Length: 187
Image (cartoon, rainbow, N blue to C red):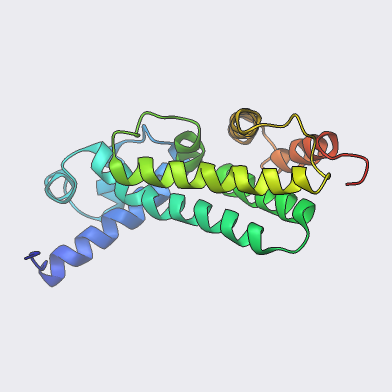
């Protein structure tokens, strides 16, 4: 039987998760846990009581993000136009990545695949992403030589542009140029 948290413990946990989302988005996965505790208005002991390690905190924060990535692909598969679905999916994933440094890092690393929940969500997200791109290829709209590995490289490039450009919207220009090179003449 699961133990119910006291009201103050629930508030502290929620505050820690909110602060962690914010700090990881700004600073990446190596962000200071002290900063997370400070922003949550709790002590370090409270943070470690709720999340015994950085990995536990990251898994809790990013499981919902990875679930959202799976849902984006599923929504794209419901779109009637395979090319528009692919472009929309790619744009939305790149946008999420560009606005959240922690997510950007998580999407291009396998360092957290020992967490069963994150690993399963990563596999599901990758599988559904391949379904989106395969559908656009079958429709003759996406280059036939574009692969899942190419999608991973595109994510790495997007993360780099988002993190290192002085223009917070530079990733959009890069993505527009890449998409222009991915379509077939019918696209």
